[in-house]
Amino acid sequence: MYKATDKICDLMAHEEDAIQIISRFGLELGVGEQTIEQVCKAHHVHTPTFLAVINYKLYKQPVNTTDIDVPTLQCFLNNAHTYFLDFRLPRLRRALVEAIIPADPTTKIPGLILRCYDEFVAEIRTHIEHENQGLFEEHEHDDERITSKLTEIKNLIIKYYPTEEKQSPSTNYQSPITYLLISVMSDLWHTEQDFADHCAIEDDILRPALCKVQKENKIVVRQTTETEELSDREKDVLIQLVHGLSNKEIADVLCISTHTVISHRKNITRKLNIHSTAGLTIYAIVNKLVDINSLE
Figure 1 (cartoon, one colour):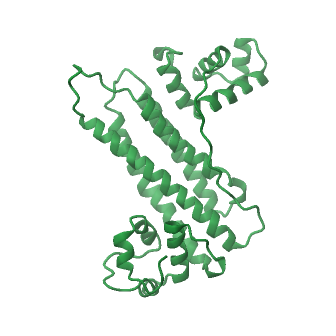
Figure 2 (cartoon, one colour):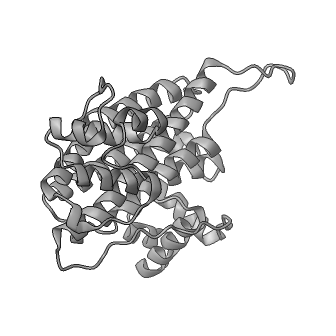
Figure 3 (tube, one colour):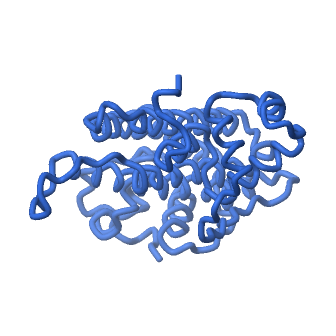
């Protein structure tokens, strides 16, 4: 655990994850041999709050909320919001575009992957807006859903990205596009972890510190299972769904009840672990359930 008397340069040099936290407290580089307490005081940052967040992030050290200065923590979280919305997510989108656009132009999969990412960013933007308004309890399950969307994007790229065919079996060199994809995948992993840590700090430090009477939000790690095969009827529902039909329209076409359609859709989502329409469309294209030219 780090203490107020430790040199902050040692923290920066030995803990990769500490750099982001330090910047979100408004602290800068060029710290010389100063201690954590000296640098915090120079920047008017509450030292116990800084140490609580650092040690929670690095060691999952339990936090005594009596040591937390709420305004300092709120400033930290607001800086994190600005970082996500104004820098990290736009930068990641540009990298994603650069990596997936050179794919086979006859397929719609790259565009659908990008749509999934834009849906993810819209979710984060809404989530952050509610956080800024203090609406934590209303959206206590957003964190898991949002991080699952990023996991879904990674899985779509891993499983369904349209790679170029090798000209010969011996041609095993990696193209620049492959390197771009690997870089993007790494950025997706880091973004997912960074956002999960951000949410955990809100849940485990800010909420208790605000002393609100509410249920404690606990992030439940979703257990994944082997993907199950879709039944013929579920495939029928999926085909109609990716063609843009509503639940009622699907029910009319397949001569089943709307309730049955909804039940099939839940089973499809559970079996494939794909929640977005764009992701389901990619699955249907890759598995030849729909003709790509039939999609608008």
